[in-house]
View 1 (cartoon, helix red, strand yellow):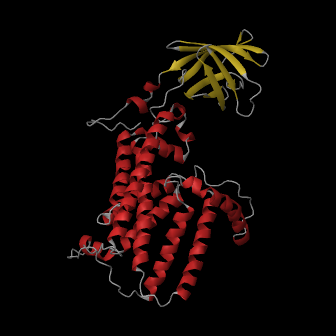
View 2 (tube, rainbow, N blue to C red; view 1 turned 90 degrees about the vertical axis):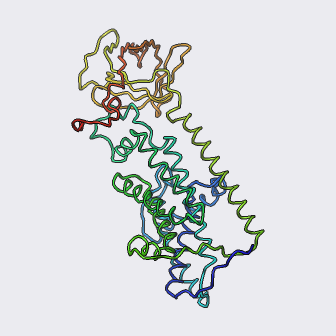
View 3 (tube, rainbow, N blue to C red; view 1 turned 180 degrees about the vertical axis):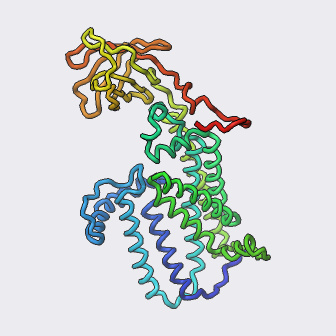
Length: 428
């Protein structure tokens, strides 16, 4: 069986220039920003990243006159100064490469084969991104239910991103909806026959993500913006057909999805490689997400003293301290929501995060701030279903603290739930 080849129709000069720019732009962006989506990519990119971490600060200072030192690189934020400078450097390479390519390759009439392969690269980059983000929403790792500290936080003290995380994390159904939409886009992008509808779904999904990132100051703006550009690039080929079908109500021809090669061995070899990589990628991400769910997700074990506790009695050297707003030593509240950590709020509205290591055998707790690991406070504790008591010494003072557990199910956000029927809007 012979595979049809793409006819060598001559492209206009403008179209060839635009293609060169797009080819270089997306290839360079993907090369510099793999998004940690491909298996073992971190190991392969360790050397390159080390070189870029030295080069990009020099580039920013030399070509942009950026005076501050760049010492923060890509982390939980994909919108660091380093990331923007790396993006700008990619654009410089793209423009320079387009000019050189145009001067050296003026006789080429078309780029059908290169066009096919850059579409393949973009499709699989989007596939990996959609599958990864989709899994983390469906398994509810990206947006967990509001944690204890968030529930007691004054509404106005939350950051825009924190507000978005609370909004998304509250609803399982909305996580499933957005997650499965991303998974659907990823699966559709795997196949040439469904790549157009997959690009349309990805465009809708990632435009929504981009607007959330813009509207709520979420630092993934560069990635979401570029996935929109990638989706639009994939749709470029079928733009006329889409306009005819959706807008002009005209008959349109079937898409040309022929392969640019006819060798059967090559075809089957690439097909086998494709499915090996796809299965491997999904397996690594799925099992990784399940493992992460048990480590820090909703299935992670809660610490032994998990909960919100409000101080009823705070005694220092046998002297009971009243809850004065000016007191900088009396505890107002302690929240234990993660293993070995606690947030302690003082009566003067100051909140401090402490290491809070619990030994359930000896019924002791060791408390110390991250910046002072020498001066540790050792408490003996007793706990029942309602009260937690801590007794020990802070510096040279003996301390006894009696705290009452607050039932987090009493929060309206937790107990309100979903109602099909609402006689009146319940907007509080």
